[in-house]
Length: 395
Image (cartoon, rainbow, N blue to C red; front, side):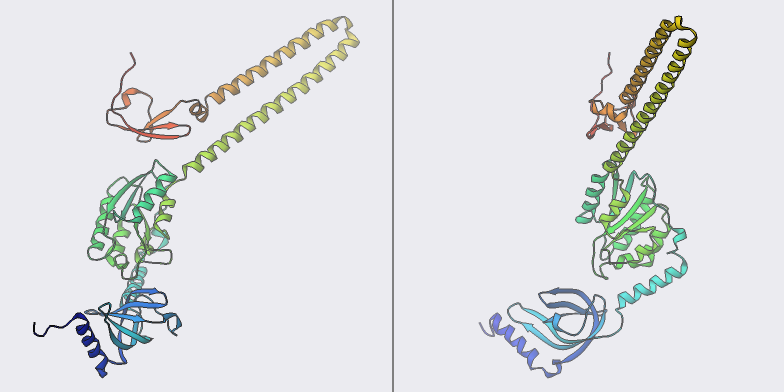
């Protein structure tokens, strides 16, 4: 066929065009740094403006005398290159100079200053964390590690905690609208607190959380809002306007979930201290009573011995009755302690008994349960979650 050439021939010809064009050699281009990645000492990024994107590469980046961050506005000097084997075009950068703040970061600072002056970040308006959180609402992507981390940590720390997910886009076009919709919808529910969460990313990736609309939607939400966006070093407008900022989504899950295991441990410790205090009080009481009795007996014996020797036998009988009385009282005390221990809810559960709850309410009658209800069976060693499929009244 006429005019047919190989891929190598075409690629070589394209490379030669770039190499031969003097106007393209050692030129300077300015733009905003985006999608920065550093691998094995080589930096890869895109230089962009409002209408175009230029792939760039810096070899031996760690040995260069300049820094580079996402969102920087820079001037790069270098030459275009076409990599034949990979079929990729890139601009090989030899020098980088600062060209002011990146547009996205500059917009972020302007928005932050504006909203701060309006009072949206004031500590006085921030709502406190509820004391007894039973249900949380989460606005994040329904796929990925963020929601799974929140579920795993919350359920591990408090299996009774309910989670209501509002699936939302957290990046790209439409993310802002879905996040705002999530705030409005969850604000109408019975959740105790709302978490806005996503993983880390570039300043551009986090841009939906830096808009004025998101800030005002969070500020107007009646429920308490926790922002858990990005990594610990990432800060967004949503962080400043929310009632509380969590450094990571996992940290947000720990904040809203009570560690029931440690709670049970503290309760057991408290019960043990109560029991020890009771035993100490009773022991002290018996010691004082015995001392008082011995003193009375001694004085009585001494008096009767001196004045009424014939009544000594009667005194022995009185002492016997007193000892018998004290023994009986001591037995009654021990019986009372046994009854207290038997009525200890933890002790009852350890003997194989269980309690049943529905909607966090204790069930004591069969009529309180309906077919299809979700119930929780509390055992000494843990909880069982079940659905009622059948019930039968004892005849």
